[in-house]
Image (cartoon, rainbow, N blue to C red):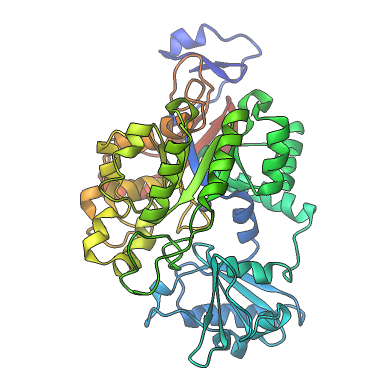
Length: 505
Ligand SMILES: [Zn+2]
């Protein structure tokens, strides 16, 4: 492969390509298999950076989590905040939500805030309830829920919009904190073999950090921004999209919206009540009228709209809103997650030209509790990857990390092909009839995300004219047993002909 100005100018035999070299040509050799660079269609950069500095509670028992908190409490000065994330009660016996009292016994004078793996609910200790003035008299905010004990006292679990009640008392990261965290996450992306990421909820402060890094030539991964929040939306609607800054390194041309919560915390909006909580149907986080207005404004200014919808009712409402707005396939509007889809709504993605942005790695988490949430009659509506593919819907795969078990594209590939989680469980696969093959999976992780971000002419394949973005793997995923996919290592990551990660160094 010969590269000039970041783009591929020739691919062929060594002698044919070498004929293009001159004395200033840099020659990079590698052993392994080069694939088009991995592009994560839905990931959270700054949250990954913050998480690298917090307690990582993924896969831990409650006892192990409390031991971690006790250790952090002993090793930091009294009153400092202890923060963590990634816990999942699905790993515990019994699999019930934890309480503030659990934490009080180990946290001393420290406020403790531990986000559940999906980010849609938070476990806090009594000190945090006190600081944020949450008592038995506090009402549930709209779109949120304060869990309570039998006596009506807040139990220490805050779901969806109830999490806002503690946001004001948690110390805010400074711009310098945020920049350090974004940099750390970007370095992690290069090690995972990612050449491009689509950051799925970005505020103006983080966008300014991306721009600073780009200006200094220190952006090692292409970033496609989904701007989130009213402030960012207002500013960008006034100025318009920013496309392909720095030779395609940074683009801001989409808005991220949220129509419901998550399935784990029963915030996903369902057409019928939860099988394991018959009084609940989930949360509606945006009104149809607001959704309509944002869609219209985005269309007028040339922005893509990417709306989070996990429950089957949320998915339907978002598809309805796109249809009402007359969204065309050329506008490439997306449903983020599309985790539960009824049989009636499934064909609408292809019919309307709406992209399903899915996260196969959720198979691991969902295998632990999703069957209980929806019951057997609806189980086949959940994470129906093969059904979506057969419906001819456009698909883009991502990980939603750190809201999932792993942000590694290799893990994601393993999960979508085997229907096992990133930890290899369950061994027989979860609803394995929804598995797809390696070729379909790799397309969904390369050209799929490229299309979903209007960049399929520049990215997603290794052909003359496209950017020289590729990932070198230790083994050919097309040739090894699917159960061994997880053992593939990333040897090198290259963006626009520039080596951003080299495992041999
Ligand atoms: Zn997300």
